[in-house]
Length: 306
Image (cartoon, rainbow, N blue to C red; front, top):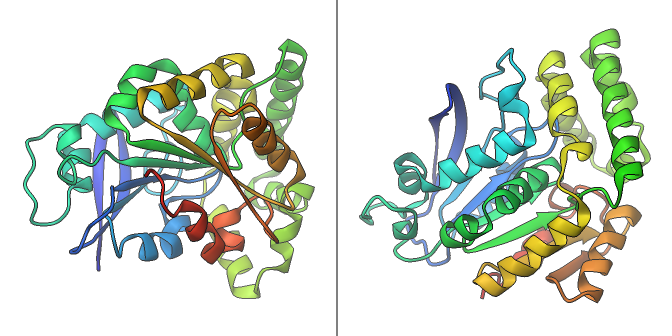
C-alpha cells in the first residue's frame, strides 16, 4: 500500500494531508480528522488497516502537523475549519486523493471511488470540525459525504451557562500555553482525568503521543482553544437537529465512545436513546478509542455505512 502526502489551499492557508492508496479498493473512501495537538500521523495504524479495502485521507487541521500556522484568527474559527472540510471534499484535489488508483473520475465529489461518497471520521476536536461542516451546510454535507463517524466528540453546549463555562476553560488553557510554554502545558494536559487510561499504554505509544504533542506550536494551539474550543460549537439542540437531518438525507451517523470515558459514553448513550444515530461503546477503552483499542475500533467501523 502506497502512502504519500499532498497539499490543499483554501482561503490563503495551505493544508497538508496524507493519503493511503488502496489498489483493491472495495469500500467507500474515508477522510480522517485528528484531535487537538495531534496530526494526520495519529491515524497511521488505523489507516494502514482501512487502506486494505479503501482509499484513506487524513488531514492536518490548521495550526497542526504540516498545515500552515497563520498569525490571524480567521482560519482557526470552528466555522472556517468546517468550511475548509467542505471545500476539500468538493475540490479536484480532494476528489483525486479519494479516488481509487487507476480509476478515473469526472472531477466531482460524487465521482470519487466510482459513485461511493467518502465517510468522514472525526475524533474529539476533529469531530467538532466535522459537525461544524454538517451544521453550516447540512444539505451540502449530505450530498458530498456518505456518512459521519464521531469518536468521543462533543455535541455543543446545552445552554449559555455551559457555553460560558467552556469559554472560560478554553481561555484559561490558551493563557496557560502562552504563559507556561508548550512542554509545561502538556505536562498538565496529560494529567487530565480524560487521558487517565492512556497512562496504561505501552511506553512506546506514550512516547510517540508525547512527541507528537510537543511538535506543535504553543501560539497556534492557543488560537485553537480560543476560536475552535468546545465553546465555539453550535448549541446542542441545533447539533441534534443536524444529526437527525443527516439520517433522513442519506448520510447516516455513528458515534463511537470508550466505555471508560464516562462523559462521552453518556453522550453516546443519549444519542442512542433518542434514536439519532448508531452507537458503538468499546469496552476497556477511554477517550482515544482508535489509539487505545485499535482492533475494537476497526470492528466498530465495520458495516458502516451499509
